Length: 458
Image (cartoon, rainbow, N blue to C red; front, side):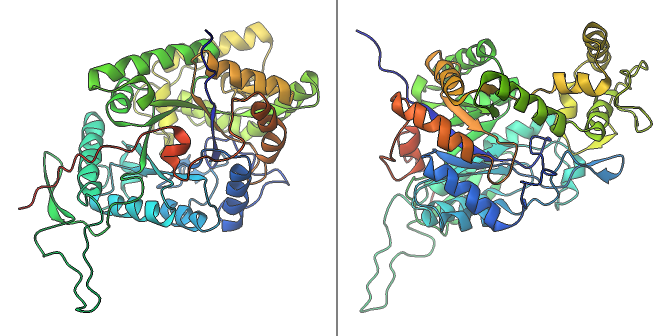
């Protein structure tokens, strides 16, 4: 007896960082105008996607003392954008990235509980940490947190938020309109909580009744050992980036294999890698489109900026169409780029620089050509039929449970995928033709969380 085919989950990432978006393209719109978010979300909902995903930027990132073209200038507040989108969409999930290093559990839990109410159960929280003092300068405590305590605080933060979400067990307000009596007693009853651990010493009464999902869907983004453990213990979905089938399968097996140690089952954590796409009427045309997108994503200036992050040196006098620098990178703390996590991916900069030189020699590439090859982002390139084949193959072969798509044009770059690839997946019976639920948990096939009600009346 054959096993049923897995249903594919699809989401849409509104791009804003890491030079995925080609903001200089004439077709690109504003990244802070609400109409851009509205149009993007409504295309995703028309295509029956699970959710829209917003990354977070708590400070515009700099290099050589300037804000540069790897970032979109302007990062509006996540909650304000998602709350506004809740009013112009009906079913699409709304996922926001909120930092656990600089915020406080009460305010974040209150904002997400409110969003879940406003959207009738469509909120999701991508829990991230931050390590750098540069970003922390915007906050009262600054970049005070040592790197090895980021995930410890994140775990405490998430536990504390869970206490707050669960502090209302249900509909507990007994309103008597005749007596104008709302019910409940200060110091007792719904919303009472207390959290005391190494990071938080808070108590009081939570202000928002239990929301439709009980608590938002929890996402974790990251590939480190600590990140994988955090996701296996606490997250409903993990946001990753694995470009090949084999790398995806290895990650998928690893993260799913960790769940049992936390008393969780295989279906309680979804693996959703980020993916880009380039389409064409023929495979040759799609590959030409992909190459053109890459050249525009990696301008000469962008190639220099990315090389500077590896070399930790000012290379502004270097020709991007010339050879890879022969000087060795400066090893140690990266001081050339500020606020970018990507600089930490170069664990051995000298070894990586030599790989760049070797690739340039092997293929006759310039520095820019090497950067284009080394930072390739197109996951799926082909005709709509070919892209549908690949997405289905990755999911059925357990390399992922679906994908978070990142178009290179904002806000309308998702439309081609929605109108050409999605119908093929629907015809094959691996993607919904209509929403069957109203909440994001229903879209993702996730059960409502048990109300652990850790609140303690004092």
